[in-house]
Length: 276
Image 1 (cartoon, rainbow, N blue to C red):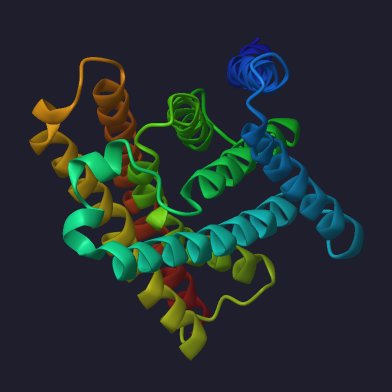
Image 2 (cartoon, one colour):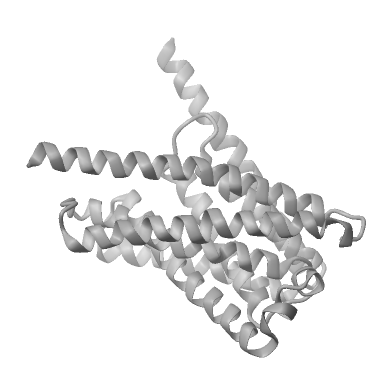
C-alpha cells in the first residue's frame, strides 16, 4: 500500500510539469505559426541545439542520464555566461552604467543580442524540463528544479511575448556564472575526482562560493531592490507583478540552493576526513 502511494505521488509532479510544458510548447508554436512571430523560432533552435548535444554526449561519451543532463547543463551555463558577459560589457562601453541601468532601459529597452540570448535560454529550460521528466532526474512531491524551470519559462516567455523587461531578465541570467561551477562539481564527482585536498578541487569550491554569493544572492537581491524602488515608474499591467513574482521565486530557491551547497561542502569534507 505504501509503495503504491509513493508511486502515485511520483506521478503527480510528472503529470503537472509535463502538462505545463506541453501548454508552453503549444503557446510558442501558436505564436510562430498563427501570429507570425518568426523571431521566436530561436526558442525552438535552442531546444534542438541542446537536444542534439544530449544525443552526441549519450552516443559518444556516456549513457548515464544524470551525467548527460549535467554535461548539457554545463554547456548551457558556459554559453549563456559568455553571451551575458558580452552583452553587459558591450552596453557598459556604449551607454555607461547610468543610462544602462535606468528604469526605461531595463523595462522597455533591449540590449544588442539580449532577445536572442533570452530565446536561446528559454529553449534550454524547456529541453531540460523534458529531459528531467523523461529520465526522472528529480525528487520530492514538489521538485525544486522543475519548479525553478517552470518559473523561468513563464517569466521569460511572457517577457518575450510582450517585449518588456528583457534587460532585467538578462541581468538575472548572470547567475549562470555560478551554475558553471555547480555543474563542474557534479561532473567532477561523477568522474571520480573527490579529493578535497586537490588544489583544483579547492579552487573550484572557492569559485563556487564566490559566484554563488555575487551572481545569485547579491545580484538577485539588487534586482529585486531595483524593482521595488522603481515600482511607481511601472505602468499598470502585468510587468511589475510578474517581475516581483519571478524574483521572489528565484530568491526563495536561492536560499535552498545555498543550504544544499553548504551541506554538500560539509559532506565532502567529512568524507575526506574518513578517508584520511
